[in-house]
Length: 430
Length: 104
Image (cartoon, rainbow over all chains, first blue to last red; front, side, top):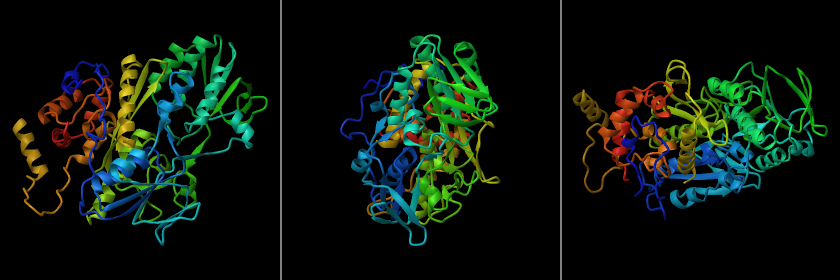
């Protein structure tokens, strides 16, 4: 086996230099679902993204055969947003971003149902799909991700196609990539950033960097104009201040505290609080809120009715019993992203498994968030934090008071990012 | 110090009862949920698919000592510093013990 012992890394600062491990092969090393652990019940998971898929896997892996898990997902495949900014510069393809739920069914016995969950009845405890099927549950986990507000001027499908947000990876990512590739030299790319809470807080800033890096090489003389609704960087301030002002000083203009009023897609013009701006490519990231089924089930009781309040010991909704909300739809002190959604899902799966055994959930859950942020085609920074449960405030509190960002954006971090991506996706979908 | 850690670990793990024949299901390892915070980067149960080091089957003392070394590094040196300082010694011992018992 071409594996290096982890102890070789201590003090070396050389994560990412290891030779790749040979894969698991034909399930040879995949963990096995245990027999009955004493936990018995039916759990329905709505949404097969990072949080939902992780929850389904770990309910089986930790709960055993007595926990029947049905995972309802609308789409045949999942496109992860993680590292998708590197599709925009042509260095990754959409196939690198694509994952399916096949292995959750094959390896762990998750009942994967293709369909769109349309409603949840908390009284009869059933999930219904658009095509009329019903799925009774003892516990339901809702993880639909985010929905996007419509920016004034972008009401029509044509306008939305002309101004892709690409904040849900997939065809929009390709559409935005193609627009960037078609820009002329000396062109203008405008990125607008909404107020939080939104998915991937650092993502807009690393997108600005990756696009600026691409334009510097391929479209000389171009500008990246960042219209930020916020008064300052929302994440990795040191990293992005350095990138914007040292790496891309003649390319990126960062305008803070800007209100976006509307966009005219036909003329590619933005109406903003600092005036009218015309661009070659507009990438407007819309304000976000929890997925539609959260609103329709009445679980949106936090952040001005945009997100779902939860008890972070179990991720049970504060609005309804036996309904748990995970990932980007949940309102917590944690950020919104795939890595932390995976961690939340394990806390929830563990809590539900214990409850289905007649036990109490772990009273002191710990989660973590780590993201890697590419700032060019070959350098990245990172942002990392551990959250502990605080019984007084009943929130997850960051150890050390806040997340820590990388000292420098480096090639080494970029290599580590690839290893992180592979294991994060494996831990979630395989 | 090591003696104290081993004592703490023995108490935390509860000197799990040995069972024979038809018996109730084994309770999960008490470090499992904590250790699952490592899986995103190090793979499910510490079995890494890529360049990030494998933890499954490594020696518990080695893992624990490594975590203490990471914790002593400068704040923004690496992700492992940030992660290691998020846990108490007792929690790190549980995490190390969990990985040492996973098949590699």
